[in-house]
Length: 276
View 1 (cartoon, rainbow, N blue to C red):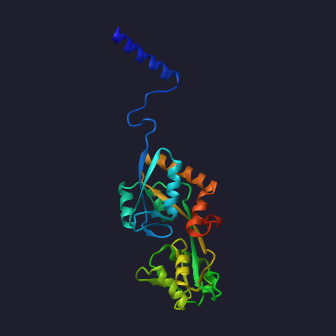
View 2 (view 1 turned 45 degrees about the vertical axis):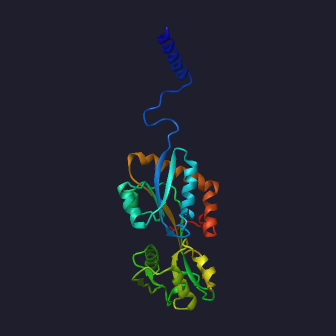
View 3 (view 1 turned 90 degrees about the vertical axis):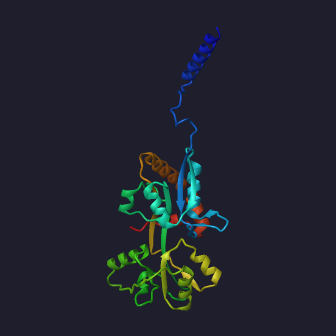
């Protein structure tokens, strides 16, 4: 009788489950499971992304990641600040599954990784000039002394592309032999050593200008591009890329991305149309 009672209880439970539309979960896929995603972001690219001496990871992209994580109930992002070289290697091998770092979209990246269809933000390239220079556009730099560009950098390519399209405006473009700190570049504009510095506008230049009391201003963007995140290409991550795309779309439409941009950049980068 005892065995019969237990069997009847089990059978009754099964009927109840079926009547409610439920079914036993497959192994490793129980409802409520959360998948941890190893995410990396740059440690020293203020205001894009940086890590404080106390270990806090701050910046535009980390906050965007946290907003995405909040929307995606099936995932938990483990955000780590990792140097660029280690980021790249880790993503290629699958040690990390999602990277951000102000990346530009390229055919090579879109072939090697999953790239969500929604951008993480905008990349603005601006000129930094003396307040009394009268320089407002690239045409105004003809005959001027331009601060050397980082060799092989994206900013140099943007200006060279503009030069090809505007051959009547010949600019003197030089490359630096090494990385020059932004504070030094801006000081050299203030002292008149160079007439203009051209670079991404998301790395805290305005804070440096204010802190050092420099008579330097930024122009309107000369180029507006999109920034993307890269996801390790695996069968499992195809769905992750789709989910991230949807989350980014909602965050943009809700104005959340604009709010984060205003907090870290002092302006809404989404107000600018992408350069064609």
